[in-house]
Amino acid sequence: MNRMEHFFCSTSLWQRMTHRYLLPWVLSGARLGDHILEIGAGYGAATGHLLKLAPSVTSLEYDSRLLAKLTAKHHCAGLTAICGDAATLPFPDQSFSSAVAILVLHHLKNRELQDRALAEVQRVLRPGGSFFAFEINDGWIHRAAHYKSTFTPMTPGSAFARLTKVGFSKISVDFRGGGYRVSARRAAEETAKERPAAASATA
Image (cartoon, rainbow, N blue to C red; front, top):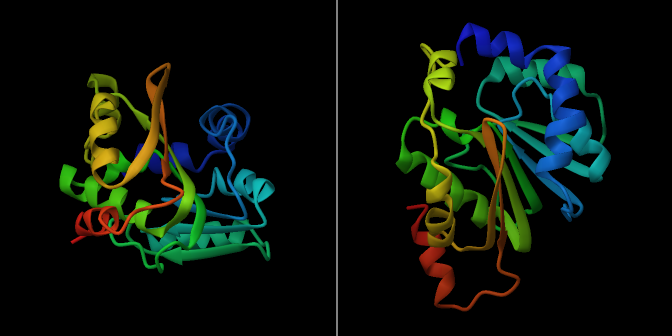
């Protein structure tokens, strides 16, 4: 992230926006279960809200400096904070009941890493588990805001095929303002033929 992103994402304004408006919309009607994986936790704007929705939250963050700030901010027995990469999740198969990624996918350097991350999310979800993401549209404003930062926009129209390829179903995409939310579910039951296909996407 660039300096402007670091500044904005660390503000109380962004945290209030996330708690009051963004997460209630992204997670509307969601069944998150008992253990949420938060991917790309950043400064923890969403973490506090997620801790109210499930007894256990595991927050993954690539930047160790941000992870230290997150753990200093949230002292809770239900929180586990881990430094790691979204494209190579350091968790066993079927570890989580749900996964949430807010403004994460466009920070991956290329489409291949995005697809690997989606496959990894599918792998670590339990059968029937749900994935929720919020992303921003491509455009000059968002490109300017990511000056000297990684910005690989994921087009909303590509979400259905890319999520289906790695084993998700019941995929939906909804729009609001300059962004969109994605929800998808790992099948409650998978055949032996389907499992290797999903796993090969992580290779």
